[in-house]
Image (cartoon, rainbow, N blue to C red; front, side):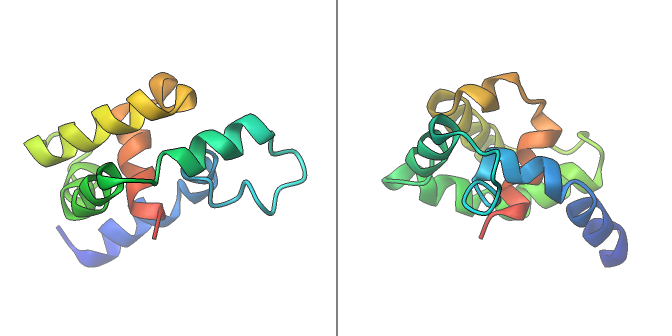
Length: 103
């Protein structure tokens, strides 16, 4: 898959991803404190390492439009859903994009 396609897949949903990753919660006037606290909780402890390590797998998943899955990505998606109520409502592709948008 060309790198430009992967980059396009990553950048296009950045606004949506920000609501899950907390990247825009601090700068958005409409961000709720509950969403901000849930996002900050989702990046603490050893589980945040699991999510960071799934970044490469998330890129493959997004680039393949959900066809390429891995155990590491599945574990990261599970952790995100356990910690964040908004993530429970998101699709796997949305969460994979969130992983890619986070630092």
